[in-house]
Length: 414
Image (spheres, rainbow, N blue to C red):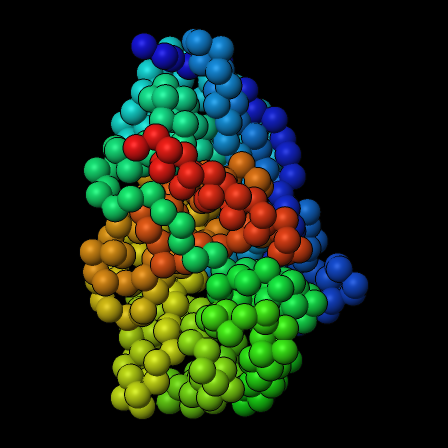
């Protein structure tokens, strides 16, 4: 039996920033990379702060060190999410309060260990989901080591008895603020789903969606200009942070009008819109997105609507999927906490005929991105975010390479 001998934790950094979304929506002004103005979300001392992480290390009885990273999303503390954590405080709490309780614990089964550790965390931690996120990555790493499968994807496939083979899934790129140069990079690298867009301020949408419409036209034109093969025909995916609905004054029909124009601007490219409006609570969001989806269907629109905000737990994801309110749900991994919830949520989406988007955040780390890439190829998600960071190249290489490693190992070890 392989057991935990020590649990160590070290403060670290994330790959982007923690941003006070409330302050930004209230008018905080960009000043270069920074924002001016006062923070409004509890836990923030400035509107934009460096993202943080905590590396957890499980020293096992056979000498192997299993690793994972605690992380939180860029817009932490809003939309039903827990408040941002302080890395030095969280690392100290993990070593002082959790380490003694995990000593001697068997790590053979991830599906047994992860919920048990999560329960210990829930009883004592403020940053419950961030802590469980990192610990579960390390536990998945440990279970993979003990099983001798060589990949975390195989552990997931075996423990959840998933019949589909481990195979590659489409990756979608995130351009950050570089909405033009990073799109060029994505096209040159044949990224199947792009550009995310980071449509996080009203001026990027326009008073009636006209600015966003122009951007979609530019993306479509740029694809035609730069692609090296006629076979390359990417899906256009935009995350609009509820701003289409805000531009439409909260009207479902006016929101649908703007989305129809965006669909026309996309031409022959399929269009996916993430978080088109924000209704202010989970139940209201399910209702509003369901009405928007029906309005678009009545117009023969093929645009896919994706839930993001207010789908913060596996239970939330289930309710969005069960209601048929959306075509897809972004499963934002740090928000769900322990990785077993992410796996359950993906499989639940499949069961309800809703596309699971394996997402996350630019504020994560390479370790968390590699762990979630293994989940993506094991469960067959509809698409998987290139993360972490906002530079695109780095996150794309981390996720793509980890995916390809897991797939090749699965092929070789059948």
